[in-house]
Amino acid sequence: MITLKGDSVYLRALEPNDLEFVYAMENDQSIWEVSNTQTPYSRFLVRQYLENAHQDIYEAKQLRLAICQDEDFPAIGLIDLFEFDPKNNRAGIGIVIQNKQNRNQNIGSEALELLIKYSFHNLNVHQLYANINVGNVASIALFTKFGFEKIGIKKDWILLNGHYQDEAIFQLINKQI
Image (cartoon, rainbow, N blue to C red; front, side, top):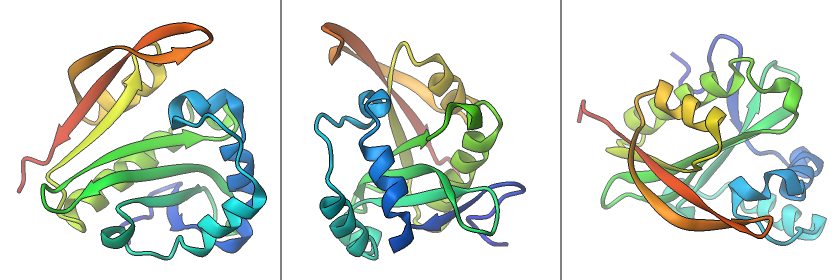
């Protein structure tokens, strides 16, 4: 079994030729809300990030993978493990698909399923969590589909367009460990 390959999606490490894709993703203001970004990134900074993307998750405490649909390599989204805590066996998880036309086509669902399985079986993670704006119905549906449970609400957590919004925290515990 290839852990990071599904029926129509596979996850791969970032490559130097992902520079323009990552640059475009990091500078897309429409997704800054979900990525906690507030300022643009230069190509120089993205290039430096890609040069260090080879770091092991135990060293970097994060893992960012490209979501791809076919073997000719172009990325269509990113999926991350962040705040990886090997002592307590937990990590945050996030996903974004770049183009709206690629959303709601099971791509994110398959990518999330692959990373959950990888996290539980290869990294021995005990729990994953996701922080989701309560108005992001699509993300809530995606994560709850895989058993993530809402465990709390952070009130007025996100300032968006001059208004504070609540953020929910969802958790998935690996019951097989």
